Image 1 (cartoon, rainbow, N blue to C red):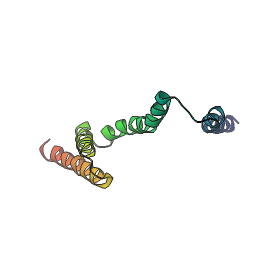
Image 2 (image 1 turned 45 degrees about the vertical axis):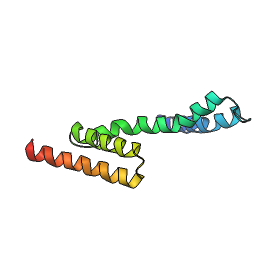
Image 3 (image 1 turned 180 degrees about the vertical axis):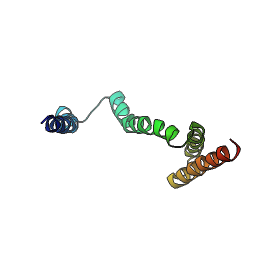
Image 4 (image 1 turned 90 degrees about the vertical axis):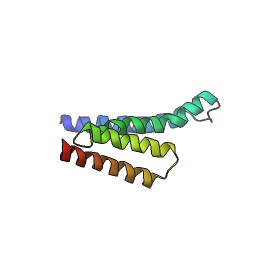
Length: 103
């Protein structure tokens, strides 16, 4: 019985998170500060979710750190998403091979 209660609570929470902003903010937001803050929320949430996963996705943290460094540098230089993804994956793979070979 408690399983159904947990599922209902999760469904209600998910529903409220999606519906409350629609009911509270009926008019356009005029505050420049609030609009700029809300503009960056998706990027901050995405980076907060992916950053720990990047570092722990390989056998060693060194491989994840190398992939992160390559991705940040290439993204900062304006490279496309596929170039960034493939290059950071190659960097992680190369570091993993080097640590297995020499370490």
